[in-house]
Image 1 (cartoon, one colour):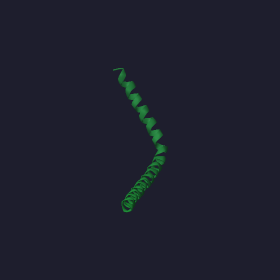
Image 2: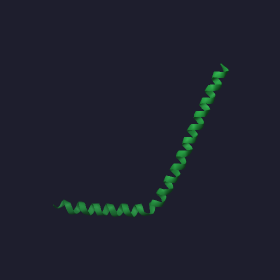
Image 3: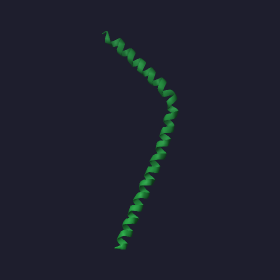
Image 4: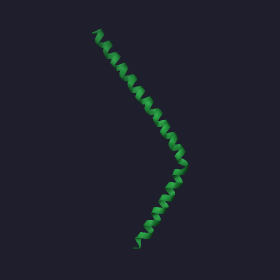
Length: 65
């Protein structure tokens, strides 16, 4: 029984700490998501360009033979 109040107190303190930390950082988190979406789109575009270049190089190589 003596462990129950201390566990409850730790939960309340942890929840208060997380709420305090999460408040101001939620704006930064939104910016991080936006940056991640931009980076993902750029990465996919880069992969597509490199893939097209590889296909063109392969076609050129086959034409030369």
